[in-house]
Length: 332
Image (cartoon, rainbow, N blue to C red):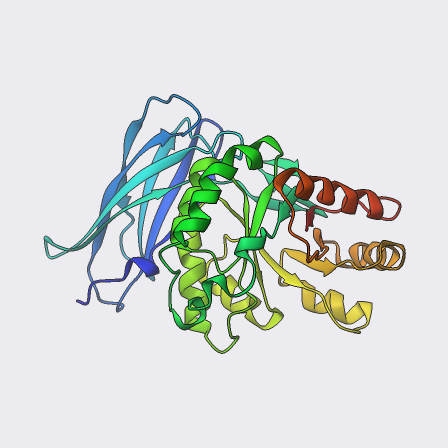
């Protein structure tokens, strides 16, 4: 048996309540007759901003099936939120014929992102996401990423030092970040500090389906990922790779409203650029009513902004569109 790659590992939560929840770890089964068992532990919660009393639960293999699946029952689960970013440590071992063939250790978060009608949900509650494309994370700063099959490992050190200093400001202003092709270290940082992230994968080629698949599976480890933006043609690939991810696509071009609605149904969220609120506002109102899905507005600004200014820009965008529509998110 060829040992799986950690990039093939998918985490997700299942049926549960505030008192307990199922947590699953899943790997592809190499062949229908491959007899493997996946076992391990999940320990937590841990939180950078709160004292906790970690407890350990066991992952138990779920037997034969189309995938290799293990399940743990976590009692009194602490779900990740921007205010209290709780995390859990997971160790897993894959055995075949009594021999360990693969093992890994990961830090994950339990999330309850979702959508209801035109609303975005976090921890089961309505949530309006405000985020900024920070200047140093724009453009070609991670230019090598499209050639990689997985997430790049490191955020440039100068940028990472700024982020460490910016964490308190982002939390104080309840501001998330939108990032083109985020690195592993950036996802770990945002998950630890409770910074919601919108991962923008539109710059990846639509022909690199395997690349997109590997990346969105990795996103299951990082509870900071509130939504992932992809091209329309990549939505199905993302859905098949990680059906638990909140997927967004941008509505662009001169299509008719009916065409927009038909093509937006696969994505959880529609994203629209706003240039002039007085003309774009009525259009957004019409599209939102027809689509019946949450919508984000993006307003691009070439000027660099500090964190307080970015928050004010999000509020201004919301105020400009308020006569026509109240959206699920605002990105500047």
